[in-house]
Amino acid sequence: MIAVILFIVAGVLTGGVIQMVKSGATKFSIGLVGVLAGLAVAGGVAWMLPG
Image (cartoon, rainbow, N blue to C red; front, side, top):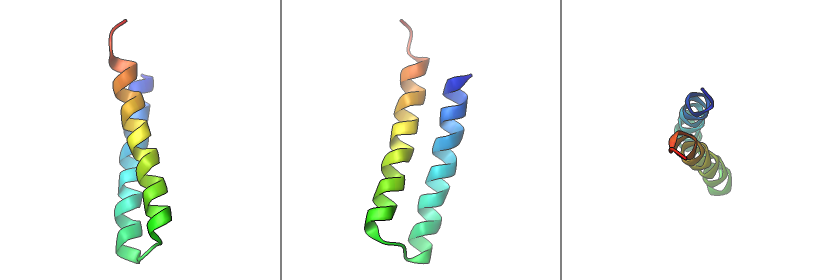
């Protein structure tokens, strides 16, 4: 269940990155949100791993 929530959060953050790029946000803010999206995906994958 937590893995699914993390993947949903990652999807929302990825959509946020796309919108930030379109609106001309700073590279730092785009990178920060992108890193958070990556961490959410990594957490979801790690949560699904057995053991």
